[in-house]
Length: 501
Image 1 (cartoon, rainbow, N blue to C red):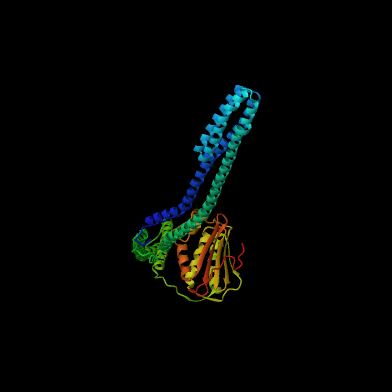
Image 2 (cartoon, rainbow, N blue to C red; image 1 turned 45 degrees about the vertical axis):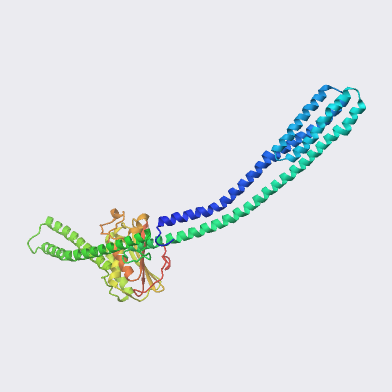
């Protein structure tokens, strides 16, 4: 199988080879079955029939002895007629032995029958004339001697038949044993060859398929520069797929760059007019341009709220485009962890009081005094998660931020008692612009970018972010960050810092 062979031809050739090697034991078995069928046919149509004929002839010779005695004693013509009829039947049976491959026995038995036929009329004539001594002499010295000769020939024929049948049975047994050995060996060889061919086919197909699968997964994750190990110069279908994959990756990379450039430019250009609108709304609300009616003040506040929401969306889009383009850099610097958490708690206590939600930050064990992060970015991530927790938790609920450490990592767990996320949607919550079906329970709408940006910030620090949720019971986000951003950390299970439910 060369690289020029197509996958279809490889499969066809492999399947044909497998079928061919598996047919080998079948051919051996069929040949043995044919031989056994021939032996069985001979035993059934020839030897068994010959055995029946010899048994009938044995009974016929016994009948000849009885009829001979009847002729001597009764001297009835009916007994002579019966004797002649019996001799004719014996001769017919003897002739049938020729068709059953026993010609020599047939001739010898026929010779004895002919002698009996010769002496029967002489014995009957002497008995009918009352010559008892002559009739008895013919019977004892000639006729019964001929009958005994016939019986000896029958015995010889029976012995010959037994020997011949035994040889056929032995041949059948030997053929069966040989066929069983040959079929077992053929099956073993055929199965081994079929397994080897299957493995070669599997390797020649599964490896390129796995490489293509990994390539598609890489592209789906945004790695448009992923290179396949399959050579595009191959002359089979995998070569064509490799060419198509390369072309697709290049086009997607170009589209991704265009998208990132468009979002970046559009977001940047939108910032100025939005700031101008916010500035004028503030001036109008402060009555710089004259008195503002109460109804107009309500409209201005609504416009201000919506414009600020639009400003946040533009900021998030700009953030997202910078991360995707690799242009967003982390400002890593030593950060005291205790003041960082205290500031975060003070920020959200006000929101907790407004929403009548219990909020607390709990330290699980000893935390490192100092970490090396971009504190603004990490605060943005935790703030986003806490904001979502408050947004989806009803009054009277609970929002918690648990902080602990494990080896060279710090673990944050943001947990709420809110509406939760359906299980089939959990795998999508970190995708851009994705919003779960629980938005109706939120206190205000979102853009679907917060979690996507949070994941990028966490990954940029060298950490991980995961989520678990149960509908109507709440959601738990876990973040694991190395104490020094950028270093490799081991995966920390959710229970590693002793979090209790």
